[in-house]
Image (cartoon, rainbow, N blue to C red):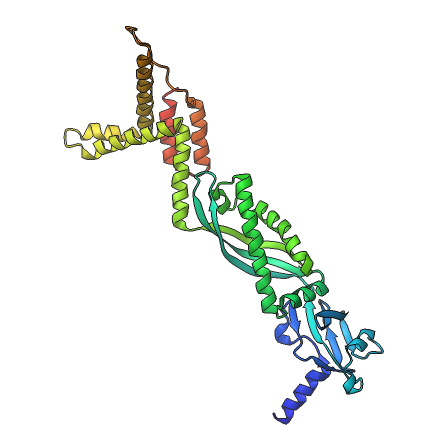
Length: 355
């Protein structure tokens, strides 16, 4: 080691402060434990210096320049090394920032979330950033020493894991209790409510460590594109079945519609016009034919139950939503983005003919 290196080392021993490369760290541990008396300690306005021995905070100093001398700072006498004749004390010195730290990024999988609308369990992800602030430096140091995570990287990693744990628990609880459709959650419709729940849930996990999350930013819950496409299709099917008056009617309508489309595609030169006409009738034809089929089934069941009668009465059609109710549901589908403008106009025209 050269002469200038010795001078630099001596300067570090005589002046203690946070290293320049650690200005943006929440916790900075001074590398030396053997401290000379009368050493000058500099503490910035937005931090505190904590003196720790055997896992216990012996004392702390706030902002300013301090000459480390036991007559001025009484708690230093507890740290004196007797064999040095009172010229040196032994302690770990931690600098803890008390300002707000923003844009701490987090993210990862939160597991399968069951969509209440379709019943599917879909793998979900969450990512974003948060702001945090140390509210009690002494609690933080004691807690981190107990966890053996006294370096800044270890503390931030631990804190992110706490954030993810609360997010997983809260989102799962909200989806069950609130029955929010997963597509609405991933669209950001409930971001504000979820953020409030997570913030409230964080306090009991971090208060004992003297840390508080003050805000979230860019909070996003997402699913895979293929899962989103599946959910949209199934949600559309569920909505159509309600519009048709029930799942059975919808399924039969889909079957009739498929038959009509098959005739449209398979018609020859003579049958092209008829096939196109059938295909053009669309969902309305499928629903109408399904309703006729249900009426016929009802009539047959009633005829079988009235043995001996020469002219059995046709059974009444199963009760279903009125045309006005279907128009209302159709409008809700369009508002939810499940129907295009053209689909909405076409189906609305079909329903208007029934009035």
